[in-house]
Amino acid sequence: MPPLQFPGARAGATRRLLRHARSALLAGLLATASVFAAAAAPVLAPSQLEDGTDADTSPLGTRVPLVLVHGLGGSPQGWDNFLHVYQGNAAWRSAFKPYSFRYSTSNSEVSADPLAPRSLPALGSALGAAMQAFYDKPVAAPDFGWGRKRAIVLAHSMGGLVARSMMQEYAFRDGQRGGQKVLQLITLGTPHHGSPLADAAMVLGLGAVSELSDTWPGFLANLAWDNHDGLNMLGGKCNPWLARLNTHAPLPGAGYGNCGFVAGDPLPGYYEKIIAYGASSLQSKDTDSGALGSYKPGSSSSYQFTYQYLLTAYGRAYANDGIVPVASAQFAGWPVWQRRDAYGCDHRLIKGGYVEFVRSATATYTDSTFCAATTSPPIPSGVSGGYAIGGTIYGDQDGIGEVLRTVSQAERVFDWAEQAYAGYLQPAGAATELWNGYRFRWYPADGAYVGVKDGNVYYMGPASGGAIQWQGTLADLLLRAQSAGF
Image (tube, rainbow, N blue to C red; front, side):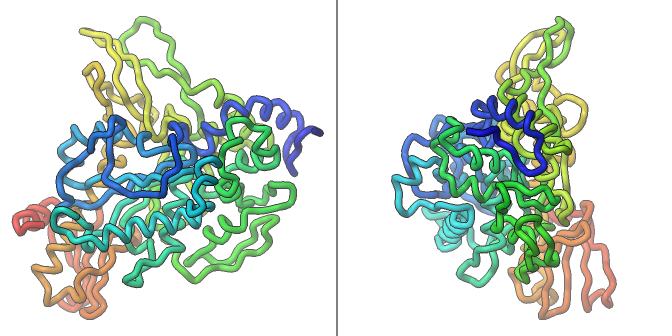
């Protein structure tokens, strides 16, 4: 075949790097956990560890559900390190209960099941239907349904687009949009704008990229670059589904290169609920010098080629994690809740972490850790076979674990306040929204708001003369909620 060239791409870089992409693209697009042994219908169930044991056998109770969504080529077992940390962290266990969404992504699995979802919108609908099943179940034993509780979603890679499809394109039976059922969406290396590597795989043909030869092509089509930055891909084609997903309210219509002008969709995008993590470089391998400290293993050598490709092939440097440009992972230009960096990382490690070697003054050992939240390395666990989360994206003071705890605590206080002050907060069961740093509920019958910001609880409504009134700290009101059974 003639040398592969993309509009705007440098042909030499394309030839060199795509020769090596065969060993990296499946690890990239977009996960590297083992593929399911057999086709299986999408299912949402309480999370299990890799050995098949339940991560948490207790009822949901006053906690919030945490939905874990893997990416392309992945499986729920890819969350194993996170779940081990969960089991040993009392604060996490008191805040949320994990549930894993499993679905097939390979060509062989999807082809074997005529009812299997064949696109990301179809997967989004499957996730919504699976969540609906938990809302339909009785809250009491043995079903342990979710009642009126809304969920937090933690998603890796393509899983973030599955979650966004559910939030923006799915409606639950009570009439609420999917995004109204989600308190926060935390994405890890999600290609919110797509990835040029998906375009590369489709232009080459799946048969030419051996690791992708058994990947369902419909998923790759939905992962293609959305052309938001004017860099057209796919030989004149576009990714109309992603362009539309990225043009929901409150955003106006916009031009998407070869997709042309995409009109704004009046349905909400819920972009303000997204915390988007991304990495802009690979993990460097630490050479054991004999000095005290921790030593990282480094990213897979296969990522070196795709990493350099994204840096050099298009006449512009796309800083990336080996698979997804950081501008895409952090949803650059869109009104998200927060953008976060992951350091000493890559597309695979941002989800499951890695094993590090540690030499201390008293011992040498290995433990498991995760990508750093700052330029400083993670704090070792101090235990052989332990799990180190201090200073990581999961355990930092503003990290994922703290977000999960804060969201859960706010929900418990809101639920308690609705009962304790029922005469001021009607109708009960309002959806939690986010705005300008506040998590809040709006009660239209009373014209009142209750919100949480920076660890404090506020009220605004007729009882305060329309002024924002401080009610106490979240910690103090949480104690009152807990004493009342919330």
